[in-house]
Image (cartoon, rainbow, N blue to C red):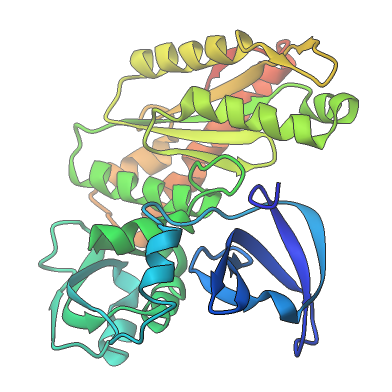
Length: 346
C-alpha cells in the first residue's frame, strides 16, 4: 500500500511535514533506512527510520521510481561506498528559441560545449545544446527542470527517461497538459514548414464522471481513469488534460482517418467492463470533439499561413484556434446526447 500512495512524514529536525514516496526499506550496518523521493520527483534519497516521528497515509498516488531503478544495486553502490560523481559523455538538450540568449549567458560547466543555433537547427523554433563531459547529478537535473516544458533532453536515454517521468501524469502515466502543449507546438511548427502536412486534435471527456465518483468512490474513479488511459495509450501524444478530460494529437492524418480513430476509441471505452466494490459493472462512456489542421481554422488564420507568416504569434493563434474548435465539437457531442464523436464546424 505504501508504494501506491504518498505518505506524510514528521521528521526529526524538520519544521514542516514531508511528502514522501516510499520505494523500499533497506538496512545498512545497524540502521534501518527508508528509500524514496520527495513530492513529484523520483530522484532517490534516504531517510533514517529512527528519525521518523509519525507517518500518515495520504490520498495522493505515489510517484514511481525511474525506469530501470534497482534498489539492491543502489544499496550496494551509492549507499555503501564513496564514489566520484559520474560524467555524461554527451548531453543533448533541445530548447525553444526564446531561451537562446539566456542559455548562452548561463552556460553549463562541461569539458566542451557546442550550440546549434536556431538558424542552423533542423527544427524551426528550437536550438540544440550539446555538452560533453558534464557531471551528472541533482544540480544538473534541477537546472533542466527549471525550464519546464520548453526544454527536452534528447541524450543520454537514461537521463531522458528520468526527466520525462516528471512530464507524465502521476495517475495515468500519460503526458501532462503542459507537455502536450509542447508536442502541439512542435507539430504546428512542422506543419507550417510543410504545407502538405495536417494533424488532428481529439478532446475526450468522460460522461457523467462526477456521478461515477460520487456513487462508487474516488478510488474507483482512479481505476476508471487508468482503464480509459489504457484505451489511448498506443498513441504517442496522448495526455490527461485535467480531471476526466484527455487529449490526443494525431500527426499527418486526414480528417476521415482521424474520425475513424476517434470512433474506435469511443467504442473501446464504451466496451469497458469495470466492476465496483460490489461486483457491479459500471457503464463508462466518452464524448469526443475532433478538429483538423488546417481544415478547421478560420479564413483569417489560413491567410496568414499562406502569407508565410511563420511567427511565434501565429503558432499561438493556431494552437488556441484548434483547441477552441475541438472543444466546441466536444460540447456539441455532449448536447447531442453524449457517447459520440463530433466534428468541428467552422
